[in-house]
Length: 212
Image (cartoon, rainbow, N blue to C red):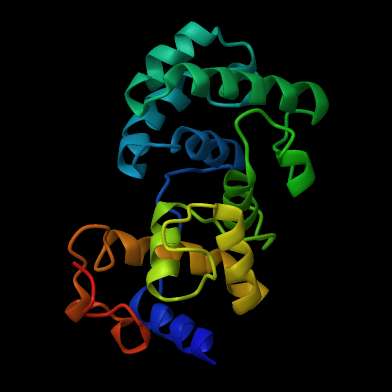
Protein backbone atom coordinates (compact mmCIF):
# COMPACT_ATOMS: atom_id res chain seq x y z
CA UNK A 1 0.00 0.00 0.00
CA UNK A 2 1.09 3.57 -0.68
CA UNK A 3 0.38 4.57 2.91
CA UNK A 4 2.78 1.88 4.11
CA UNK A 5 5.48 3.23 1.83
CA UNK A 6 4.90 6.76 3.11
CA UNK A 7 5.08 5.65 6.72
CA UNK A 8 8.27 3.68 6.03
CA UNK A 9 9.94 6.67 4.38
CA UNK A 10 8.91 8.94 7.25
CA UNK A 11 10.34 6.53 9.82
CA UNK A 12 13.58 6.40 7.89
CA UNK A 13 13.86 10.17 7.60
CA UNK A 14 12.50 11.15 11.04
CA UNK A 15 13.09 8.21 13.38
CA UNK A 16 12.95 10.35 16.52
CA UNK A 17 10.01 12.55 15.53
CA UNK A 18 8.22 13.82 18.61
CA UNK A 19 6.44 16.78 20.13
CA UNK A 20 8.40 20.01 19.75
CA UNK A 21 6.67 21.64 22.72
CA UNK A 22 8.82 21.37 25.86
CA UNK A 23 6.97 19.75 28.74
CA UNK A 24 7.49 17.56 31.80
CA UNK A 25 3.89 16.65 32.63
CA UNK A 26 0.43 16.39 31.14
CA UNK A 27 -0.35 19.77 32.68
CA UNK A 28 2.64 21.44 31.03
CA UNK A 29 1.87 19.83 27.67
CA UNK A 30 -1.76 20.93 27.83
CA UNK A 31 -0.82 24.51 28.66
CA UNK A 32 1.83 24.61 25.93
CA UNK A 33 -0.57 23.19 23.36
CA UNK A 34 -3.23 25.76 24.20
CA UNK A 35 -0.61 28.48 23.85
CA UNK A 36 0.55 27.11 20.49
CA UNK A 37 -2.66 28.09 18.68
CA UNK A 38 -1.71 30.60 15.97
CA UNK A 39 1.80 30.67 17.38
CA UNK A 40 5.07 28.88 16.67
CA UNK A 41 6.32 26.16 18.99
CA UNK A 42 9.60 28.06 19.30
CA UNK A 43 7.81 31.09 20.69
CA UNK A 44 5.80 28.95 23.12
CA UNK A 45 8.98 27.27 24.33
CA UNK A 46 10.45 30.69 25.13
CA UNK A 47 7.37 31.67 27.14
CA UNK A 48 6.63 28.51 29.12
CA UNK A 49 9.72 28.37 31.39
CA UNK A 50 8.74 31.65 33.05
CA UNK A 51 5.08 30.68 32.99
CA UNK A 52 5.72 27.39 34.81
CA UNK A 53 7.97 29.07 37.36
CA UNK A 54 4.95 31.05 38.44
CA UNK A 55 2.17 28.57 37.69
CA UNK A 56 3.80 25.21 38.19
CA UNK A 57 0.65 23.18 38.62
CA UNK A 58 -3.10 23.20 38.16
CA UNK A 59 -3.72 24.65 41.61
CA UNK A 60 -1.47 27.64 41.04
CA UNK A 61 -3.02 28.44 37.66
CA UNK A 62 -6.56 27.95 38.97
CA UNK A 63 -5.91 30.69 41.51
CA UNK A 64 -4.40 33.10 38.99
CA UNK A 65 -5.84 36.42 37.93
CA UNK A 66 -6.46 36.50 34.20
CA UNK A 67 -4.64 39.82 33.83
CA UNK A 68 -1.48 38.34 35.34
CA UNK A 69 -1.59 35.38 32.97
CA UNK A 70 -2.10 37.71 30.02
CA UNK A 71 1.14 39.54 30.81
CA UNK A 72 3.15 36.31 30.78
CA UNK A 73 1.75 34.97 27.52
CA UNK A 74 1.30 38.25 25.63
CA UNK A 75 3.87 37.39 22.96
CA UNK A 76 2.03 34.21 21.90
CA UNK A 77 -0.85 36.21 20.41
CA UNK A 78 -4.57 36.10 21.20
CA UNK A 79 -3.39 36.40 24.78
CA UNK A 80 -6.73 37.43 26.29
CA UNK A 81 -8.59 34.42 24.93
CA UNK A 82 -5.72 32.11 25.79
CA UNK A 83 -5.46 33.45 29.34
CA UNK A 84 -9.20 33.02 29.81
CA UNK A 85 -8.98 29.45 28.52
CA UNK A 86 -5.96 28.57 30.67
CA UNK A 87 -7.46 29.82 33.91
CA UNK A 88 -10.83 28.25 33.07
CA UNK A 89 -9.16 24.95 32.19
CA UNK A 90 -7.24 24.87 35.46
CA UNK A 91 -10.31 25.65 37.55
CA UNK A 92 -12.37 22.93 35.89
CA UNK A 93 -9.55 20.40 36.30
CA UNK A 94 -9.23 21.38 39.96
CA UNK A 95 -12.95 21.29 40.69
CA UNK A 96 -14.07 18.29 38.64
CA UNK A 97 -11.00 16.14 38.03
CA UNK A 98 -9.19 16.34 41.34
CA UNK A 99 -6.41 18.47 39.92
CA UNK A 100 -5.35 15.79 37.45
CA UNK A 101 -5.40 16.34 33.69
CA UNK A 102 -8.00 13.85 32.38
CA UNK A 103 -6.91 11.13 29.97
CA UNK A 104 -10.00 10.67 27.83
CA UNK A 105 -11.16 12.53 24.74
CA UNK A 106 -14.59 13.18 26.22
CA UNK A 107 -13.21 14.75 29.38
CA UNK A 108 -10.52 16.81 27.65
CA UNK A 109 -13.03 18.32 25.24
CA UNK A 110 -14.93 19.72 28.22
CA UNK A 111 -11.99 21.92 29.13
CA UNK A 112 -11.89 25.55 27.97
CA UNK A 113 -9.45 26.06 25.12
CA UNK A 114 -9.34 22.38 24.22
CA UNK A 115 -10.53 21.20 20.82
CA UNK A 116 -9.84 17.88 19.17
CA UNK A 117 -6.35 18.79 17.95
CA UNK A 118 -5.20 19.72 21.45
CA UNK A 119 -6.82 16.65 22.97
CA UNK A 120 -5.15 14.40 20.39
CA UNK A 121 -1.77 15.90 21.20
CA UNK A 122 -2.09 15.38 24.94
CA UNK A 123 -3.59 11.90 24.68
CA UNK A 124 -1.07 10.61 22.15
CA UNK A 125 2.08 12.35 23.33
CA UNK A 126 1.69 12.09 27.10
CA UNK A 127 -0.78 9.30 27.77
CA UNK A 128 0.16 7.07 24.83
CA UNK A 129 -3.44 6.83 23.69
CA UNK A 130 -4.03 6.98 19.94
CA UNK A 131 -7.50 8.49 19.72
CA UNK A 132 -6.80 10.50 16.58
CA UNK A 133 -4.22 12.41 14.56
CA UNK A 134 -3.10 15.96 15.24
CA UNK A 135 -3.82 18.00 12.11
CA UNK A 136 -2.18 21.41 12.17
CA UNK A 137 -1.29 23.59 9.19
CA UNK A 138 1.80 21.51 8.42
CA UNK A 139 -0.03 18.18 8.51
CA UNK A 140 -2.88 19.54 6.42
CA UNK A 141 -0.49 20.88 3.78
CA UNK A 142 1.57 17.69 3.61
CA UNK A 143 -1.56 15.52 3.47
CA UNK A 144 -2.84 17.49 0.47
CA UNK A 145 0.48 17.42 -1.34
CA UNK A 146 0.82 13.68 -0.80
CA UNK A 147 -2.73 13.08 -1.98
CA UNK A 148 -3.75 11.55 1.35
CA UNK A 149 -7.00 13.44 1.78
CA UNK A 150 -10.13 13.64 -0.32
CA UNK A 151 -10.78 17.23 0.75
CA UNK A 152 -10.18 20.02 -1.73
CA UNK A 153 -6.67 21.45 -1.68
CA UNK A 154 -7.87 24.75 -0.26
CA UNK A 155 -9.93 23.05 2.45
CA UNK A 156 -8.72 23.58 6.01
CA UNK A 157 -11.25 21.32 7.71
CA UNK A 158 -8.90 19.57 10.12
CA UNK A 159 -11.41 16.93 11.21
CA UNK A 160 -12.11 15.82 7.64
CA UNK A 161 -8.39 15.58 6.91
CA UNK A 162 -7.88 13.71 10.18
CA UNK A 163 -10.60 11.22 9.25
CA UNK A 164 -8.98 10.57 5.87
CA UNK A 165 -5.59 9.94 7.49
CA UNK A 166 -7.08 7.66 10.14
CA UNK A 167 -8.59 5.54 7.38
CA UNK A 168 -5.22 5.08 5.72
CA UNK A 169 -2.77 4.53 8.56
CA UNK A 170 -2.72 2.01 11.43
CA UNK A 171 -3.86 3.28 14.81
CA UNK A 172 -0.55 2.57 16.53
CA UNK A 173 1.17 4.95 14.09
CA UNK A 174 -1.18 7.92 14.48
CA UNK A 175 0.81 9.83 17.10
CA UNK A 176 4.13 9.28 15.35
CA UNK A 177 2.61 10.15 11.98
CA UNK A 178 1.48 13.60 13.08
CA UNK A 179 4.87 14.44 14.60
CA UNK A 180 6.73 13.19 11.51
CA UNK A 181 4.47 15.06 9.09
CA UNK A 182 4.98 18.23 11.12
CA UNK A 183 8.76 17.81 10.83
CA UNK A 184 8.42 17.23 7.10
CA UNK A 185 6.23 20.33 6.79
CA UNK A 186 8.75 22.43 8.68
CA UNK A 187 11.55 21.09 6.53
CA UNK A 188 11.52 20.29 2.82
CA UNK A 189 7.72 20.42 2.44
CA UNK A 190 7.47 23.97 3.71
CA UNK A 191 4.64 26.19 2.54
CA UNK A 192 6.71 28.42 0.28
CA UNK A 193 9.24 27.07 -2.19
CA UNK A 194 9.25 23.45 -0.99
CA UNK A 195 12.53 21.63 -1.56
CA UNK A 196 11.16 18.69 -3.53
CA UNK A 197 14.58 17.44 -4.75
CA UNK A 198 15.70 16.96 -1.12
CA UNK A 199 12.42 15.58 0.19
CA UNK A 200 12.60 11.98 1.46
CA UNK A 201 9.01 11.40 0.27
CA UNK A 202 9.68 12.51 -3.29
CA UNK A 203 9.41 8.91 -4.65
CA UNK A 204 5.78 8.63 -3.48
CA UNK A 205 4.63 12.26 -3.77
CA UNK A 206 2.34 13.14 -6.68
CA UNK A 207 3.15 16.83 -6.18
CA UNK A 208 6.95 16.44 -6.34
CA UNK A 209 8.46 18.81 -8.86
CA UNK A 210 5.16 20.56 -9.51
CA UNK A 211 5.19 23.02 -6.60
CA UNK A 212 6.30 26.63 -6.68
